[in-house]
Amino acid sequence: MECTGIPELRYSEWSESLHKKVRDKRTPLAGSLELTFRCNNNCVHCYCNTPPNDAFEMAKEMDSWMIKDIISQLADEGCLWLFLTGGEPLLRPDFREIYLHTKKRGILITLFTNGTLIDERLADFHAEWRPFSTEITLYGATEKTYEEITKVKGSYKRCIRGIELLLERKVPLKLKTMALRHNIHEIPLMKGYAESLGLEFRFDPMVNSRLDTNKGPLFTRLKPEEIVRLDIEDEKRAEEWKKSFNEHAGPPGSDKLYTCGAGLDSFHIDPYGNLSICIISRKEQYNLKIGTFREGWYNFIERMREITLRTNIKCRECNIANLCGQCPGWSQVELGDDETPVEFLCEVAHKRAEAFGVEIS
Image 1 (cartoon, rainbow, N blue to C red):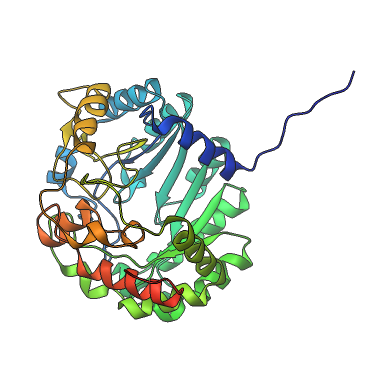
Image 2: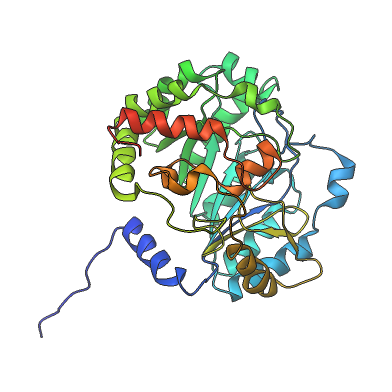
């Protein structure tokens, strides 16, 4: 009998197809969960970190029982991907318990970590219970630069050791960095290091204020022209930007406050059990300690998606508005309101458009 076969799809194609199918149904397919704001590093650009042994912070964090209960609720509502992040999530003594519960509920885990707390026991644990992916942030290619950013002596060697331990056990791993004025000169070296290990590497230059609106991290931010230069110098990144401008250029075409995908199939939960529409927009939150995830998702988040703009901001008519990253979250942390455009984002978008030959109306 002839076998018709099943067409083979790359993971990226399957994932994109699934997101498109469920978006109109508002299934919470993917989310991020901050297990703690505490971190054993003290990075100059971080938007949320507090000291690792901060007793006041620990007292506010959800306990393991509540976190596991929320994760079960997420699974029941169709969540397939979950990013476990922080702060440094590995600081929690109950991390393995939370991680295993998530795995056993059938959710694919991506772990965001600085890698410095990964020892042989933890590496063995991840080899046995493999994550969908582990992403380690590498802050520099040299010890000097790395620790200029983390402000913790010995953190560079611990990070490199963590990378080596996971590689030895073939745990799925990617490397990334925040592109800062401290390390811009070492980004090619970091990329080369990752490629020498056979690992994917990416960088993110879009530094924002702290969640408490403290502007300290902005002093680490690159200039718009430096960001665009990095885009151009990275061949793959340049091609992705060209494709994005070709496919998505144009004004928002909506009077809604949120015009991105936040709240359509994605969500964020902080260490205290607060549900928000995304990881940066936290002005409005729904407390999962007193309500269910289902109620928060289908009532609170849905209402957030329906909020309309109150002012006639310039972004409404801009034909690159869909590509600049302007959103209520950025406005909230940098300017204290939902709608005022962040000039930094505007400058970066215009310089990118100029670099990739896009006319701005």
